[in-house]
Length: 446
Picture (cartoon, one colour):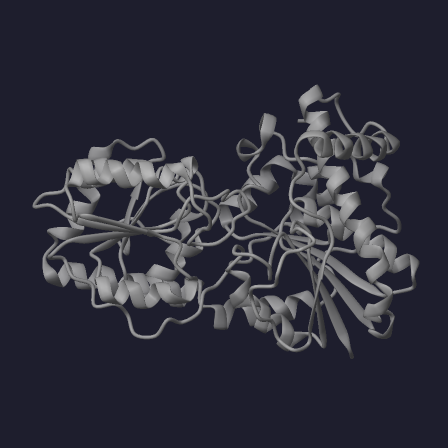
């Protein structure tokens, strides 16, 4: 039975970002006869930077988030569609109305650019087409519009499926604490899969009428091979993230200054937007990275900190093997389920991290590392790192083994992705209503 899947992304396979899709795309290509990748937030002149399997077709439809006059125009166009649907709940704050209108305008623009490209795809020849949005955000709204258009053209759309990560999941990550059109998307999609139990619980609690269709499906990382031969002395701590405020990388020098006997620090990743869950090493340059470099030199002393900026994801495992770190440190204020932490536990590296989002599903406190409260003090983080540096060698080796074991148990891409692809080809979890219109879906009243 020939099957196709349309995968809606932000930027993959263009630019840097969404590196975790590099682990998944091969499994999608193996499970479907045709994979159509639609990047919705890249400029028209962007060049493809990642290779994809032969049965993948790459399209682009839409562009980066507009600013200035372009944003105002997009808001105005989106407002027409939002108003046409009519009220779906309590009146919204004007700022939230603008947010919804911008959201809708961006999705409509992507669909206008995508529609003329559909004929060449020949999707009508497939017995089933699955629409799969990687984010429960603009891409998911584009997926709704696409499914309607495909059905209008007589294409058999099997179901709509969306993942959810962080910025597309947690209201506190959005302007005005408001995730646009949440009720609309949850009503339309057959299955919604946050990548953490933490995210699943949030959606089920705040949208109970949609709870049966919301279930966790984890991301996975590749087996990097032999674990790192971590060492406690000389002590080196590694970290990897965008250097943006939410990651709080600027606090790391002060934390490390509290370690007994001194420590060296290496951070991979450079300044970047970081709002689209764009992978573990970041992109671009910026003042904040230079500020952290200066602070690290002043706090830790010359030669004790190395911040090389962006490093390709494929190189990280070898870099970690060379450094043989005592621990990986993540002090983010907010997270979904950090792929960077999955990657290091696969190498048997213990982790000290803030207990935010789904981090506590990767790091088991006292087993493969230590968890910190979100609003930790530097001394608490230093104490957790000191516990690893000064642990008896047998105890430290046990923690390293537990790190690798946790990856094998829950985050091995060779296990999680084939199972997920099989699920994509199955009928929806719940019977689809006879007819759902935008007005039926409703709108979040928050």
